[in-house]
Length: 258
Image (cartoon, rainbow, N blue to C red; front, side):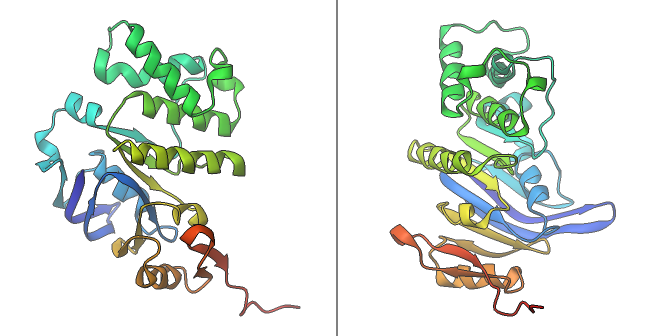
């Protein structure tokens, strides 16, 4: 669905991405790495929001620059880590913004658009308070609304920067179930995550360190698991878990006690 070749990006004179190569297919892909590794910068580059000094991004085999803005908006949906929203908009009005790529700025939503918006709100569990204003919501509630807005685009590819921010454990689990369902529907979900336990539930894991791809593959791959432990300075251990899925544990063996 999307491919990066030799991406080099510098911000403020500092190299952030250093020759990143990767390919992402349909399914759920999680991007992980230490703070400052370049995860969010990579996601913004994949979304076409940052132009690399070197290298290129291809969507469906076409270079990003060959896509018009409306075409790109219908193919991929972007959700920022700290989404900008107006507190005066209602939940439903915010989710309806996801339909602009199909309707244009002056378009009037019809029955089909209303059905898409309603389904997006149901999937993100925010239908019950669709009339409330954003400034009346908690951080976790707003996060679910912003995700519903991304779903309402019906884009085949979703690029989500820290979608679990402010979410409690039950809603993080619900989000993982939603990502798996979207993957079964043939859509691509690329999520930057700090929660390694959640990231290990993805179909593909991309491990970033110091602006480079350290490892990429299925979370069950032992080589990828060792690379994941290494980039976090052996502060974690990845071990077999239930249902064939690995689990992550803090490595407390070398912590000095009083």
